[in-house]
Amino acid sequence: MRLIADSGSTKTAWHIGDADFETHGINPFHQTDDEITGILQNGLRPQLPTDGDVTQVFFYGAGCTPRMVPRMKRLLTASVGEGVEVEIGSDMLGAARALCRKSEGIACILGTGANSCYYDGTDVADNVSPLGYILGDEGSAAYIGKRLVGDVLKRQMPHDICNLFFAETGADADLITDKVYREPMANRYLGLLSRFCQRHRDLEDIHTLLVDCFCQFFTRNVAAYKRHDLDVCFVGSVAHFYRSELSEAAAQCGFKLGTVMRTPMEGLIKYHDD
Image (tube, rainbow, N blue to C red; front, side, top):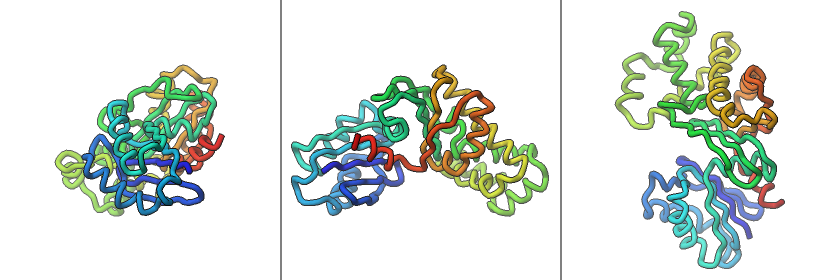
């Protein structure tokens, strides 16, 4: 049987046979061997069929850089059994295979963070570094939240929107400064604040902000691949929830929006079934 995993720092989605389940997230960049082994032994192992039934494992995850691949392969093999074929890929490769399967295309991730690549039908052939939420991640939830906060605190938004933001979020300048500059996971906090935009996307100024954030993603990432002939496909919660604004931004920047998925698992199942 084939085991497929789509893993982030928060949770890992697994699929085997007709079963789907989740465990805690696995990110080898941030976790120790013992932490990862604990998740695999306590979360994964009890969900698997009897020994010998798993023949292949395809694990796509955040933090699975080339340097981390041998380590993740070793830890997974120890948990699922020797002799099992184990392939480790980045979350970007997982997204590309889910979206484009075995055809070339531009594949993108838009969630708390952002990423993109040119996919040649087999592997990630070109990748513009996303640079993270401080230097990049245009179009991500963290980036939208950062833009929103900046516009509110610098009085670039209309007065009524600023008041609505403060009333709904309970945030003020001091709290936001502490959360962003003095506490960990500032990107997640900014991503949470971006939900204000989802609730009020019908307001003209919020709509304009959203479309501009996505235009920044296209011009600073996708345009670098110089492949306007290819559809630009997306996976992730931000792409899913803001599909109309994303489509508008794509048209403004001269691109055609292709497949949009909230999660990559369904596409990965189809890819490995082909």
